[in-house]
Amino acid sequence: MGLWSVASRSSAQTRSWGGKLGKLLKGGEIIGLVGELGTGKTCFVRGMAEGLDVGPDAWIRSPTFTLINEYHGRLPVYHIDLYRVGSREELEGLNLREYLYSDGVSVVEWFEHLPADEVNEYLEVKLAYANGNKRQLMFTPRGKRYEQIVEGLKA
Image 1 (spheres, rainbow, N blue to C red):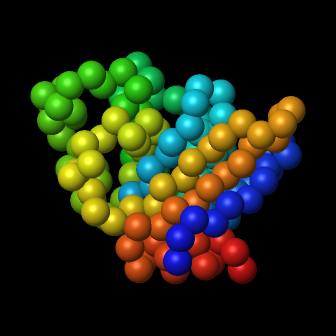
Image 2 (image 1 turned 90 degrees about the horizontal axis):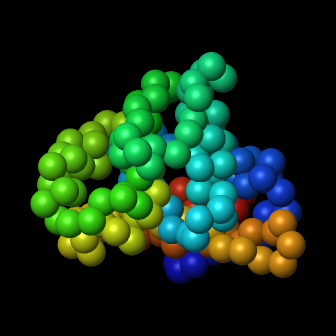
């Protein structure tokens, strides 16, 4: 199974897709977000957090300056932003493996900044501009577990 794509007509719809994904997660997943600035990555993460029962009082914001924000819901959520990470040494300094291979859910913005050999199985979610306020959300599963998650999203 390869790429599965949906259109989003609003930030509320993008958030809703994130919520659907969050509800399907069981722990230990890696969600890699790819997309230009302003395509809705953090909006999608807000929805995921809701789907994972992170309380409404949690202020979900892009961790561009903190690099990693941690939230607690049904599972721990590690919101990681690699936009400002320049070198492999900087990446290693973050101890990402501690998060990526935990029982929580790691959601990584600017996933393409992660070295290609760092993770083998994950769900890539690419957000792209379509016309107007529309966005295209493209889900690419890497591994059987992620194929099942995408099947759940389609249902």
